[in-house]
Length: 489
Image (cartoon, rainbow, N blue to C red; front, side, top):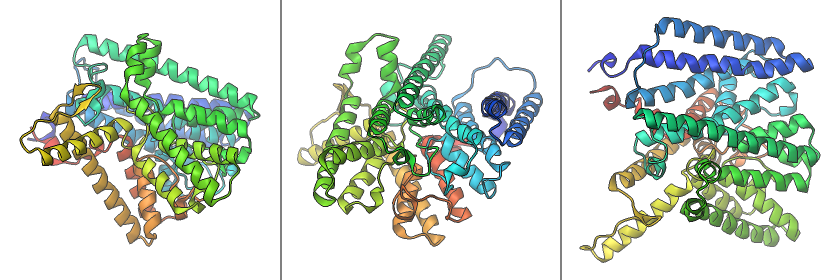
């Protein structure tokens, strides 16, 4: 069946044009800051906003009159992928038009890293950027952070991935007017919660000694679990114990599902929040990993007790929530510490948070599935449901989880092979692919916390950019549109 019979290009194009026009309007924020402070790069930001606005306007005009019809599931999936690809492309224009990036490849990589909240950078010296470009860089992560939460509560449940069923009943994908209204109300509430947390961290960091601009930028990237910093040395550049603990606290908050904040603040349903298994598992993983890493730093690196605890807590939280901030060069730590952090990269934060990774809910479900298989081997005739929160997980959700894990491993393997083919060493190729696919940012070896991605080849950067977008869209959403079955009735 040909494409127009299952996808309505005019409808998809018109909705996409609204996102592009909105992005052009959002570019006025750093542009206004540049004009107000005379911080430089006014022409780059103005030209980027103009080009983005013109493209969005042309697309809107070509798409024709408004169509008051609901999106089909396939159209919603396609639109989601196109929106994120468009954001990354048009979002790279301020970088491309500025003098700080070598070309489109580096600009797109930085933009993809921003909107997907990955935090990988091609820049060796971040301080060389003007403040308005710094602001756009961090602001793009803040926008992408809440964008992925809204994607999770409104779009991904339609695909039926493993783990998505956990909140499908709360926020479905506008199957009826009632649900559409509730989704919009939830989106507004989540934005308010996100803004309040951002302002709270900004104030705390300002009082702790950061200049207001740095405090705002780091609040943007902390709440988005993005990890971009205004300093090349990341949080370590501020050399402040208080700042370390403030950032750690808000990283922990950002790794918790925003659905829980919605239940707590809007629905006032404290019982469901305290009964939720995922955030308890999340905190347990965080505390256990911190304890192990603290011991390693005390025994193998002769840290003082408080310094060991602070460094371990910060780095475990940064990696588990996929933020990617650094206060230490963990690529020089004892191998056990590096392996521990590498494992945490796969886990990630809670479902419905701004964090990347597999997500804690899926990791717990995967453990329960493995446990069930052991029981089946011991008792072949037994019936053993997979229980989460005392509820039986449907088999299609379990199959979706296993498919997601399989696709993640295939994508990770493919990315590592491409990087290795460009001459990158094995540890760098593997850790860079994992760090980008799961939206962590810094990896190990040549892409460690004190290094950057700028020395990689163009092919490697485009491959990792694809990994960042695929990982942020939880792999299914992007890869699905490349399958023949998606375009077939």
